Image 1 (cartoon, helix red, strand yellow):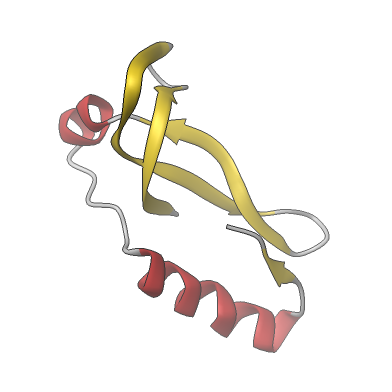
Image 2 (tube, rainbow, N blue to C red):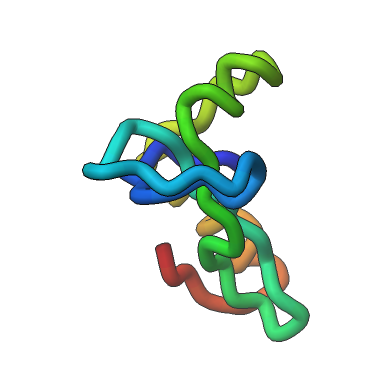
Length: 76
């Protein structure tokens, strides 16, 4: 899932920013159930793909609902 965050680079476009910009973390569930960021994306990528990232609170609730059922942890 895409979660709003300040990022210093965009892994998808191979871009590095001079200062942090509003972008997103791509958060994934690992094989052991840990939700953590795996990639950073910049605002240009989000706009180009039409992606509206989730707020931190919404993403946390979504991950929390899953770990309540399947176990795991949240690390973002």
